Image (cartoon, rainbow, N blue to C red; front, top):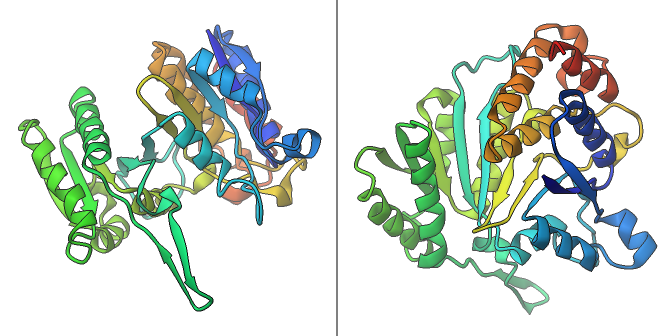
Length: 332
């Protein structure tokens, strides 16, 4: 199967190389079509996202990408946001679960966050009213609320999940968040087999750090989803361990959710687990679940031994060292 591969910036090339080593070790039938985006492309070509990348994603329908640096002061507000808007990747899906026996006071965390990916404040509609006043416009629509909430409930049913929590601040933003919540109540009626609850985002944040095991599937708006998914990552070891995927109607871009970490780029220090687990999400969706589970079990075995920990986990291992340990634990 042909997959568009975007290596990205900063540590992106290093962690994507580690991911490809795992693919090669298992001899998985993936043909990567490598086309990059980001600062390195801009420096050579004067554009952050070349047309050939758009063409490749349109053709292959599946892409996997490393982190891309957001340009400051010029260009897109965010290259990631631009890709999501271009292909209408309305569902940002982030599973929050420790991939191994890491030391944590939080046990039993196993939640999946569905974040609406195309509107809310991230639509980027802003006005400069005066030198001393600026407005950001929050956009919530029935159509886009319904499709992300529907997808969350469908996921819960298909994966034997028991509860969906809809997260808003509808007590204050009664029109915008109120519309999202209203749609959620309507969709929930179509899934009587799934428990449904309504929570305010501030209460959700508190509950996540006091009793994260109470959550199963969460669905929310763009800004809240961004914040809560990073909070969730902090419960189970950090962003270096968390995979993600952006899905639309017929196109998906899989991506590790951390940044490009330019301060350690090229130093062989980055943790590649998030990128390798992102590969697992892709494999799940293309009927390669057996290989995905082999990789997850190998990561678990790797994290049993603290000598394998990279710097973000409190160890001294390298990007390549972590990848090699995971491959060794595949038992091939």
